[in-house]
Amino acid sequence: MRRIVGPLLGLLALLGFLAPGVPAQAAAHNPVVFVHGYTGNSTNFAALQAYLVANGWSGSRLFGYNYNWAGSNVISAQGLAAFVDDVKARTGASKVDIVNHSMGGLVTRWYLQKLGGAANVGHVASLAGANHGTTYAGACTIYVSCIEMLPGSAYITSLAGDETPGSARYGTWVSPCDGIIIPYTSTRLSGADNHTLACVDHLSILSNIQAMSGVRDLLDS
Image 1 (cartoon, rainbow, N blue to C red):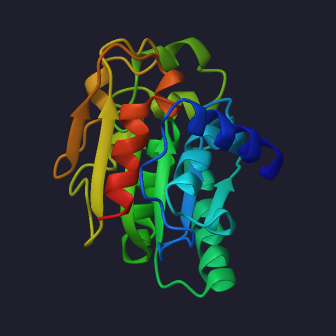
Image 2: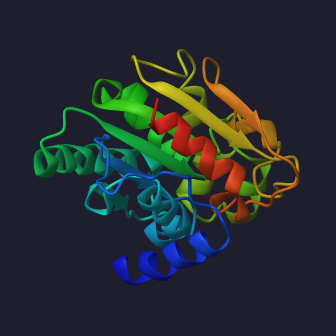
Image 3: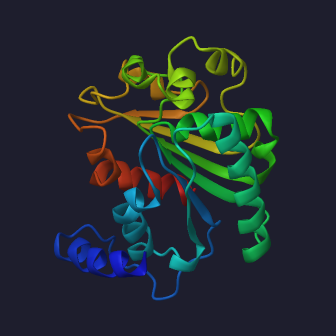
C-alpha cells in the first residue's frame, strides 16, 4: 500500500488537492478501517488513503479489510468484527472509524446493528454504499452475497430499525450517475448526513475530491 500512496501524494499535491497548512505531525485521529465492495479489495481506497495522509492522518493507522465478497455478508461482518478488535488491540484505540464502499455498506450495517459494533465506532462514511440493496445485484445471484444485496432480501429486511446506531457520526455520499447502486438513493441512511454529488460513477466516487474532502471533514469532526 505504501508503494501506491507515495506517488498518489505527489499527484494530489500537484493537482492542488492538499489542504493548506497541513501539520507536519499527523493529528490524533481514530484508526480508519476501509471496507470494500463486491469484487473489490482494499486497494480501491488508495487515492482516499493518500488524501487522508496528506491531510494529517497517519498512514500507520489506516487499515484495509479484505474479505470474500462472494460469500455471505454475515460472515464478512463477523470477520470485520474480528478485524476491528485486532486494529484496536494493535493501536490501543478505544474506537475506529469505518469508510465503506458499495456492498461494504451492508457488511458494515450488519456489524454495527447485529454484532454490537456501534460501541467500537466513532464515525461511519459510506461511499455509494448498497445500504438498502441494489437491483443490479440481480445480475450476480449465483453468489449468496448478491442474493443478500437485492432490495427486500431477508438480509436487508432483518436490518430494519435504527440505521445509525450508537453515538457515531454517519455520512453518506451518492450520485444520480451511479449505475451500480440502483436506485442510487439506496445509500442514504436515516439519521446520517446524506450528501448528493454531481455526476460521478460508482468507482470514481472513491477518488472524487468532493467526496474525499467530505469524508475528511466527517472523520475530523
